[in-house]
Length: 259
Image (cartoon, rainbow, N blue to C red; front, side, top):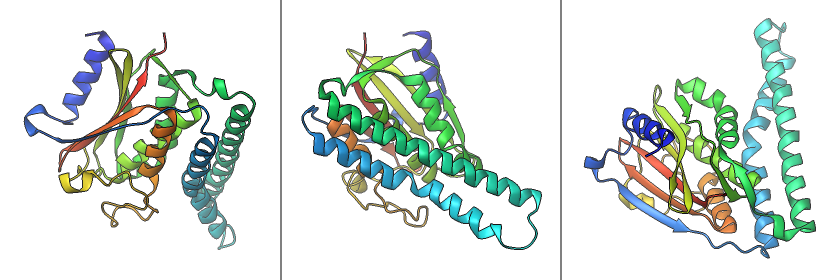
């Protein structure tokens, strides 16, 4: 076991995630990569845009609601700055989506390419930092030099949704770990949490559209994991889910290792 694998194993044990004695319920799903599925690729990009841009748009709305109320204090000024940051993020995401769509149209064979994982891990953590901070959740990223054959836009969207979902279903002061380890010819990418877990009877439907396991914890549409599933199918990756009620969950993506 390499040093990175040892650190990942140690942190996972320390977070109390997926102890062997608990015999967690598991689910596996494999996608089928098809470079000719242009419609599917674009549909996933559009779904990601519609889902992932909802949160920054909400921040913008809140900031503008406060703009005309009373005297603008330093606190209100900070809210306005957060609104501008959200606008910039929205523009950046749209540029990424449109750029990926154009690239795919001009060169279908180049859709999958080597993607470095650590920058995506850190980006997923940073983009969910505010939600984690509000709940006092510690999000940790395990350093890695690993790369996989994938698509950076889609894989980033998968990780962003998995971390966001983990935050929603993890109690305050909980922990989330993002890391990876080698698994034969693949790399296993893990998003582990110390959340409420998923009951066995619910596990089979978590990737269905408009599914919310606990509506009291989330007011969204329940399409985050559906988007993950569609992206996994387009990329031809595999995703496994292992969960223990009240102990936490681990979502594992298997992607071919880049040499």
